Image (cartoon, rainbow, N blue to C red; front, side, top):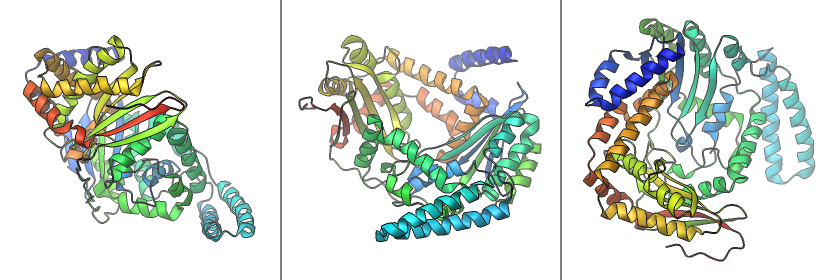
Length: 502
């Protein structure tokens, strides 16, 4: 069966790359798709793929770091952790006793925070001991990781989730005949989820922040970079959250966030694999239809102002020098986004791309170089970033000068027809490889349906790529890669002489 899938994928790839238009593939693909909206507003995309008796289940929740407000940053990511803690049935040996114990923990936490704000050190020590004892009492009723153990026992694989600036996505694969198990578990954790071990998991997230955003120079630079680049839009907030917010957020805060954002109208479910669509729809209505519709989520009103002011962030660190430059660009819904993707391919994808060839291969002033549009997200106007790790014996100024010259060249000279054709082919091939797996297909269909309003835009995107001309790329590069609006971030080795960036 694995060999069959490889042969089928190869034949599909050859046909896809040589076919006249992606629209024809869309017409064929639509025959495999069932699209529906449940009675409570959950959007559903079902795709039949009968090559193997398995299915991938994706629940794309339209809430991420950009939906947070100051004071509760990190809650979207923290709640993602909590969604694996189980329900009033799964993950507990005695829920009623556990519920009472958690209430005691919350009460002591409130007293603890009040004493900390007053600076009452004597009372603080007493409360910390009582709080630890109350947590231990609540933990005795917890059945660790029972949610995951159930899935693994029934043949599930890839149980995971991720949170970014735009969304929180939950997924795993199961044998197709276990679909009802997914329906029950995934709907139950959003209907009757229990935020157990909340403060312990909060500490886990705080440690995650220390490892990713505080102990790593690049993590520290990126956090300062986005805060400098986005002065108004919440893209400027770290998805993992600010440490002070994580230290003070409560279980009640997380519960309020859950009820506000995890509404049926904010969910898109994609199921791809060996399924019977009508049976899936019946099960979805039975289980997910239990979720009560809430108020329509408020749209984000803030738009990042475009100000002709270049900005610079410099991080001093004993480690490796690093260079980063970003330019404001529109969201993925904009007509120019495919051209920005093609520009990124030409500039930095592969050894023959312009930046890699010049900075890494020829001049050897960088270990690697890259670029991509849509940082830190693409649901809203964001940034196209260019980055490089400076090689020993060279400086960020050398990297910046070479990178600036290549960006200037792509704005003044037309790219070659061969470069454009290669970029188009790479983008098509990348998409085909991503859509080859049930999970990859489900992930992208749910994302495009949520962000752009229609999963078919995933296919139309490739048509727009194929229609690009060399003049389109020069126009888009000239319009968006404007140094007047650029933000530059660098890691400078401590003790090195000052460098004048171009």
